[in-house]
Length: 216
Image 1 (tube, rainbow, N blue to C red):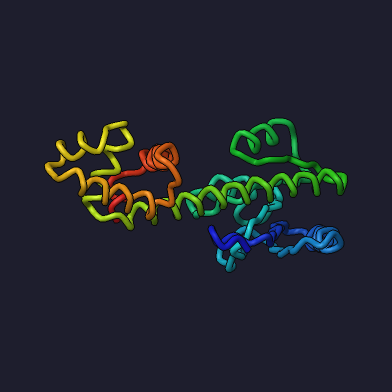
Image 2: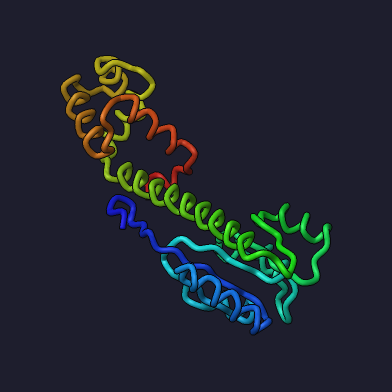
């Protein structure tokens, strides 16, 4: 486990397919290579099921009773599900594959497909999800460090990253230069910035957030 961001090295593959024989075959294949897997007969069951707190990839059948794989894929973002999707289908065509890829799927495999092609797609999906989770965790940690600053420290931080000297910052804020120096030292410690360029990079990452996110 990465103690800095709370991520683990564990991974899981979710399989959603209404064909029991396909679910079993995929379960056997993934288990044989040491990959944790959970299977579901339909999208509705997957939606309500508890999710693992680890990097994941979703193998999704295109055509299923009830909510189809394509429709579910379109709804995933609204449901807060950002898993990379590998589509599998026995009834696919070029147009369907193009639409799936445009909607963000990382692979579109037509049954029967080679095990190696599926495993390669899964590894790409897991790597994508791991990178996404890591970036999100690092962003949340950075936001937490920013929120640990008091109001005065935030004022100083916003000014010093523009290149102003301590004396100039003090004049703008109407405080003493020593106050700016003290606040600046606290900023560097709380933001875990080893240098001014480090602090500038952190502030650049925070600029895309709304005032409510920065202050809540």
